[in-house]
Length: 190
Image 1 (cartoon, rainbow, N blue to C red):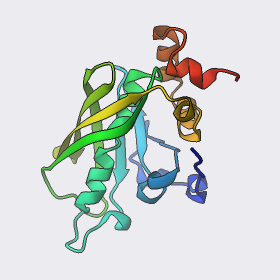
Image 2 (image 1 turned 180 degrees about the horizontal axis):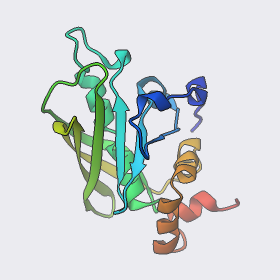
Image 3 (image 1 turned 90 degrees about the horizontal axis):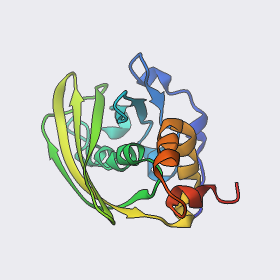
């Protein structure tokens, strides 16, 4: 798996996030390069809030955020689940994603979401994401993601960057995991 970071990762996007503890989800690879920037905030209860500012690139001809852009953001539930579950295994690929659009999102709106892992089996992770604009629900989504322990995924630049961004999630993985897991694969030989 070869991914190349875009030059967008070096741009300053801080003006797009609200003030507070929001940090850039600096994983400018593939689709994220064209969708982003996306920001995150860690919560005390070990969840990840995700957010993005609706910009011109997200708009449809009717003057609202395109449903495809909102569905793309809903797919970021995998990242929220990865944070919540730690790095025992990777939360990819998406198996199914259902999105309910609850209100229009306008240019300049801040869209903020919380992801809950609702079920985890040996091979699948189920999520629920609710996103708000100005305190009102804008979308609700449910996702099912495959849990993988592939060495190639573990060693990808994307997962290396996530581990750098989220030392608390890595620490949870170190504490909860046993030998031979995804996290151990990712750190073998390092």
